[in-house]
Image (cartoon, rainbow, N blue to C red; front, side):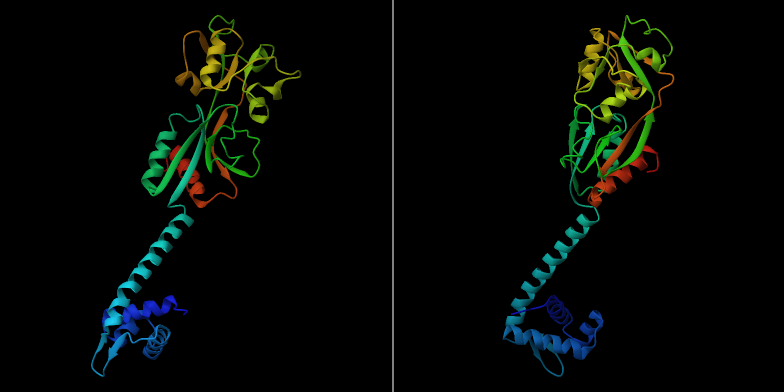
Amino acid sequence: MNVELRNLRAFVAVAETANFTRAAEKLMIAQPSLSYTIRQLEAQLGFRLFARTTRSTALTPAGELFLGEARAVLDRLDQAMDVARRMAYGEAGTLRIGYLIGAAVDLVPSILRAFDEQFGNVHVELVEYDFATPGCGLDSGETEAAIVRPPLDVDSITTRTLLHEGCLACVPENHEVASEPAVNVDRLLREPIIAAPGGGAWRDSWILTGHRKQPARVVHEAATFEAEMQAVALGRGLSIVPASAARFYARPGVRFVPISDLPDCEVAVAHREDALRVAQNFAELAVRVAHGCT
């Protein structure tokens, strides 16, 4: 038996209107075509659905029973199509978002609130990543979108800038530049420095590799701001940090000095180029929130 959905929809329309003419108008088809469709369905089922006379169209007992089941099938199909449509357009499903510790700390809550307001049927899972994994799961597929600090050694991703901020030298409180209003990059290059674990473009950018003629004298590795600040406070070396670190991670024993000739660093939202629509929706909304466009 091969009952088609158009046959079920035609049957329900006739049953609900009790009139072939009105049902044909509702379905926007010719009445003879509708009559043929119903006869075809009855032939496939092997029993009559309607008791028809010249004056009336009524459901048979079997037709009454079949109507409930047909409605249930069509309702389930409509629900499935709606769920699939919402997922295809990024309006439902699950979104795993990675974020680098300390990146856009004061902006991320606003982004998440706005996303929940607009895409409340999307279940969001947040995953925090430390400095050893600046790609925040995009490279491994653990996340679909992420709040990151470029540059990243991750292929085939799309990034959109959320904000720029200045860079600071984080130094021990007794360091000779601790009380200066600013310092230039050359003054920092001969200092022992604290780095993120691992390697790659992200670590290189924060230990000023592009400004050096000789390799940096890395004396300690730290995967979090807490570990980094502690190492600086103990006098092991200095570190280069975004300006927001002075607001969120300041503590006794360290000082933050602006770097006068270092370009601003960036915070961005990223997703893979082949990401589902839900990740693209998140990135687009994050940019709007960051730029005050919501």
